[in-house]
Image (tube, rainbow, N blue to C red; front, side, top):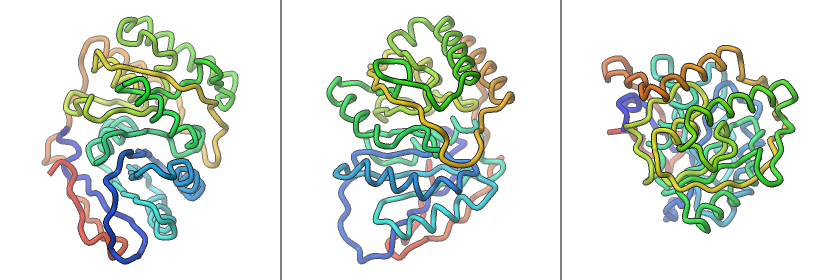
Length: 288
């Protein structure tokens, strides 16, 4: 595990009910969030419906400064689903969205992990198709692609679609072997076999964690599932000029096989987390 997750605390936010044996989760749904309070209820409703019949844990990794963590706690208490929350405070938000995903991968218990955004531009209904494709094709990584088969990027708009295509083309030009056969290396929606990746080799910087996984893990068996990138449900896009510059820096780091080292333990401060429901009688320190 990267050291930067050592003090991130995991809280189990289950609804109040009498203790009962829970099936070992087969799937973890990892949702990095930053100020997405308005999307949480609809997102959880759709994820819960999509994974019916699949033992699933949902892990939020939250970098918010608004009330998103409180909204997650409140909505979870009203739903019969297994939800965990890692709230990363200032000083713990190493690697941005990519770092949040790495922290979630380290905290998850299921053998498969599906990563998607909280804004519902990644339709949760595609999650079972990703899992089915990975199992059918004996893949380590199933990418939800906007550019294969019937996939579409409607929710991007013309300008963002052009930028996304240009960024993807630049990545393929720099890493033709590692990205061969992947039509959408810029996708933020994918499913990965956790045993196939080495978290201590990842050095995420910004929001393109899939690119980080593909380049730093040569030999991953991949498959793709087409999907339509939807309009944002609520809130504002996090895609900014700053994120674009961070992406260019990430490409340079990957090309030169470099990246920032995780911060030391002393640079982080412990997070105190209260159990949210009677069944959650403990907290767990990620990486302990």
